[in-house]
Length: 368
Image (tube, rainbow, N blue to C red):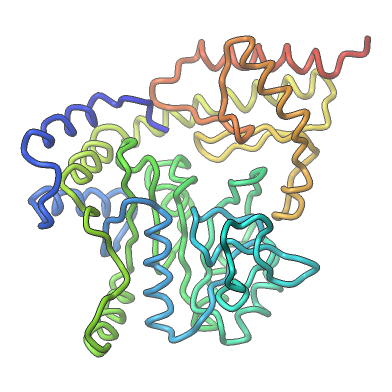
């Protein structure tokens, strides 16, 4: 998201490597990183993990602990890493394990309820059961074809969770490219728990989950009264000094408001160019952009939910498009039709990709 070797991050890693890779104790950089996180993303009490999967898993433990409820509500087609609870789908309207899960013997419907994104009536019906500890959601669905929230969706989702006593967990692992502070800060969302990972430390494996202060107080009360034993949260090498060095360098020197604004301008240029190519060739495709993230979708749009997103995939056409772009010198994410504009992406690179995309569509939609 921020380029492959951000110089500030490389320097920070090199400097810290000479002082130690892990202490199993906090250092002064933890305080500075905490302040930078709050400045970037809002008022949360933070814990460091190694992956967003871990961060989501630990967040769900907190949600179940403070609500004393068993289930998480997720959206069909969601992406939350490899958290077991989120590996569910809708099968004839019922929650079921996703097909193909390796070694999965548990019926995950005991842990999760799945509904379609943007379906507030289904959300309300699920919350009304009193079983839902938390709603875990991306602000924008990203792991299939991108699906945007409909107007008012997030505000009503927040209202419904409060009304029914469930927590709201926003997972910004893929949407932090929306702007400084991610989608949550850019669009004024108000989660109880905030999860972020992937590029937050410039590429060094790092993720974080943060609790709003009032929820942190509720969890502290629970924690003081539970029986002694393992919490099931945290790993030995999480919150190591190398992570803090990379995290601090990324937040203060790389993922700056100026850099993110440049990324968004580049992404808008890319999205406009791709859309013009689609229109020029009369392709029944569309383009979606969220901040610096751009995706072309080989179907008409907009898409409303995970079912429509899954149906919009055209694997053979997408494979040909990717290979044809690669043959012309443009490599995009091989498992999505997705592109990220970084702070070091140039206008010439964007324009070359657009020109190559135009040429590929000319091949695919030739009337000869």
